[in-house]
Length: 587
Image 1 (cartoon, rainbow, N blue to C red):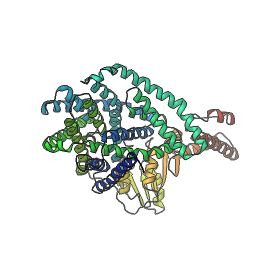
Image 2: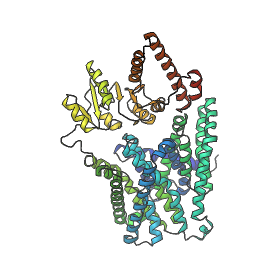
Image 3: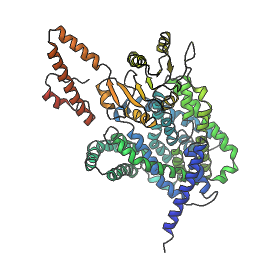
Image 4: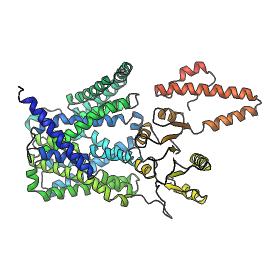
């Protein structure tokens, strides 16, 4: 016979997972998303409806690890170089959004809800944060994660996650609970944050990478699972010990491993745990909602949710315009981030513990966040046509359609034109996509039908017939693609071979581990041809020219192999300098 503990845990697990599964399937079916399904399922099984599962606070404490794992996976998507490139968006756009939205919502709560100023701050500042767990999957499923729009949205979300530490500090500083009097002051928490982040960066550089290299040599998959979870939990535990954001620690650990060769393996191993725990987090939040208090003041919840959505949309749109976004893009960004976020529940709980707000207020504003999250899919759906950029000035530009083409060419400039015309010369149906209006018009004058659109977006590629195409050629200029984007496209359209134009050697190294079938350096063959002509002009015999080309190609192939293995453009310097002392260019 068993004691009462284990059966209770098993029963709670069965009930939570069962209800979560049913409601998520239902809500996904009607287009409302998994997050809202988990919240409603938690409310149904919680103490205020069916009362099937209790102790939501304990389950929430465990489930917060899901947020931590989410930030670790987000960190894996951002290598330090890309993070540095996005610094202006993160610390400019993100900072302005959190401050402006936080103060605007605080003013609304203070004036119209008649809370004290400390309570209004404790409620208004958390409402400035949006739902990372809801927005990121929306960006990924639409294929916009790697677009300029997606990067701006992600930059704001990232700064919101980073702002958890100062927001916790602000709430703690206003606490009326005598037990919080011994908490460290804000300036000390700031020092802790800098020291902890620096320590994690050093540990990632000198400990984590050798650690994962050792595990990689063992070839044991389960060891990767253990090591990945240990990395996340250890980094989070260090931050918690210092009284800081556990999610921030996990994010830094992810960034430190973002450009390691083990990134994809780690992401695949941690993702199932992240999904389960994040679902449990929203289930626990739903259980904590006091539906009785909400039922007593439904109009207050509805009015505040509308005010929250309208305020954040307007403020973010104004900030987007200040950052030179088009008004349609700025409006789309505002709507996408108009909801409250999961960290709001965490900050409300801290404000309640600090005696700044009562449990009824925490439940009311938790319901406001939940309702605002429920509106996001609806708002994005019903405003899609209104938000769409005008396809052209001086005439309509058609978006691509699935017309049975064997090949799709994305980018119809000087490179794409050559590829496209050779395929067309062989009577192969081709769908052409570009974003350059002037080029589309010129191509039309010569009889070529080029569709307008961002050919890196999954939804647009699907519209163009990528699911049935045998080939997708990315011929855009510049360094616009990365391995993650190509892997996502390959997973969405596994039937199509991916051919990619690489800007230079660095881009080739970066893309060599991607799902692309072929990656071609854009100027290699033309440069080799010019070199052959130059040698011939200097009187070199054809046989010697052939040998020179063979030596160059041999050196280039060997150097590229070393660089790809090390994921470092400078890795082959010493090796190739000994074997090929006559040259070692960086391109």
